[in-house]
Length: 357
Image (cartoon, rainbow, N blue to C red; front, side, top):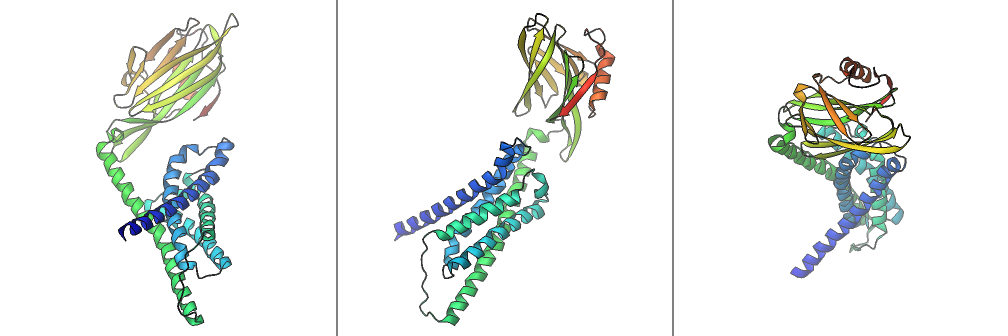
């Protein structure tokens, strides 16, 4: 008897897992494949979407398994209509419950429609669940009145589950979210006053074909509850003996240390083309910049000149300009021009175009 009970629990768990996995897979395909295939924005939100979608899929899996208990006495086409409606309602209830409880504008947080993904994945999974073999719970008296009463009672029970389950999941999600936030405030380096985080880059492409400006922007922690947007540092990369043809940058983060990799394809006077690579390590806790054996304190200046030569040598000059304001490209180049004279062959730097990441 005990083994039979264990087997039944295992079977229920596996069935719910399979249905949840199906729902999650469909949601991922609907929401994520279009931006990936079209190279659109939104891929950076994949982790948040996956977490929210997993919880949604578990609820769909539970409903998909237990709907047979409540709807098996209905005709097939009635079950399909009910489950299509259930999938749509569950997606709306889950989305709005998260938006209301967490005060997150879920619809606006993603560049793709998570609501559409959840509607399609939920309805498809629930309809498939009703195609599976079902255990018949026979009613001893096939009286029409009894049958009508049973159908009404089970439909109401199913509707109650449909509304309460996503709301309950959203409340649990909210509690877990607050516990994680409390843990991060107590133990994460990101909540230490003075710590910084990077959030993007601004690239200024210059008419001077041997120069390229990169500005790293982010936030500085003023207090536990307050961030200030800042420009962390600015670099102008110059190759006096050649022309920068193209650029390829990389970014790596390990806790409070981020590494920015710069790679430039350069054409020298001899018409030969070579790739020149260097990396800059930023410590977001002590506000220092490291490249090779050189360490620079940003408090002494956050403007840097990086000079590349044909022998793959690199020299870095730090200027005593400290400006944490978020600057536009024109202002950055203007400030560089005040200190660059005498350091580079072509002067002044002239902006061609820019873009932000």
